[in-house]
Image 1 (cartoon, rainbow, N blue to C red):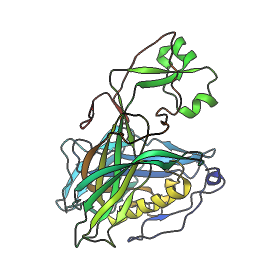
Image 2: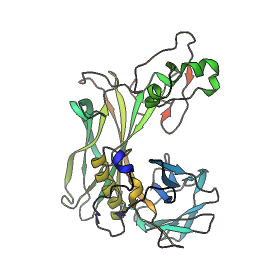
Image 3: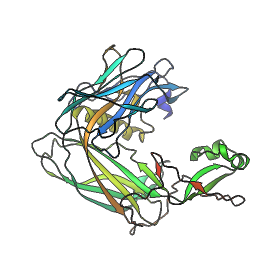
Image 4: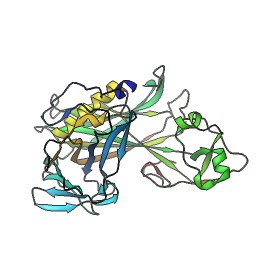
Amino acid sequence: MKALVQNHLIIFSCMILFCGCIEPYELSLNTKNKRLVVEGLLTDDLQNPDTLKIQYSAYYEGFLRTEPLDKQVEAFIINITSEEKTQLTQYQTGKFLPPTGFKVKPFEKYLLRFSLSDGQQYESTIEQLTPTPPILKIYEKFNPNSRLSEDGKTFLSANEVFIDFKDTPNQKNFYLWRYIHFEKIAYCITCNGALYNTSKKICVDLPAELLASVYTDPYYDYRCLGDCYDLIREKQVNVFSDVLSDGGSIDGRLISKIPYFHTYGCLIEVQQMCISPEVFSFYKILEQQSQQSGGLADAPPAAIVGNIRNITNPNEKVVGCFGFANIQKKRFWIDRKGASGDLELILGHPIIIEVREPHLVQCKKSATRTPLKPEGWQF
């Protein structure tokens, strides 16, 4: 990672895949190179709509940081087919959702259009929603040497999840897969013991890497009040083109490697989507970068120009990508009956319980956690 934060980002080979507008570019590491970043994939999932994020990104002292936009931002989805214009709701600064009941339709054409308070106007390329074939089968296999550890010295065990599906014939399809891994947890918060006992109001959930390096006082883990489930999402990009397999059966596509956190089971939701050539090109480059740098957290996604352009100032390079997709979802229970070996630490550190002042912590619903039992959970 240090090599990426010297004077310039490492620039990977320019790859033009089916589209000439997606390309990496050089990003100078200084405070004056603030870039607009757009991220989102609007699906037809009414119950769980995706969030559109519009924000600024820049490097400060070697670290990539995001900056919020001015609140005076208006964003719209334009249906080119019907000429219908739908305004997105900004529920947090720079974060947008479609209105309740809004749904994109197969074979109709859409684009994203938004404007900033300084008068700059932006829009995406036109996207057509392509129907996605259903997932026919999900299955898993325990592999004791599946995942490379963070230090790169050993392989860790995991339940590897695969799917089968039938590609739509006589149609160019570009696939993107995501997943949500549901894992039941017993401890809801980790905090510095001194802070907790002095003022419970300032007890905050601490990242594992800060526990040893920043805080000298002991940390404690506090049990959840009632059931609580972590929602763990994919870290690697997973895309595929049917150029060499049009209309064929796609069997054994690897979707995820689920860590061996517990001896009891867990749940996974696989999401399969057909995306446009432009969106595929963006994610394909991102996939290659993450493979070379070790993961999305270490990759320089800010160096990829996507399918968003500045109408007011065509010379501006806008980072990121926005697309539309029909989504097919399927859940699968992993019982872990064939799993064995050492358990991984789901909190990233050994559990230390506060014995002087035991306290139960409420499981708060968020994008990464829920107190509600997920549909498909088996105990």
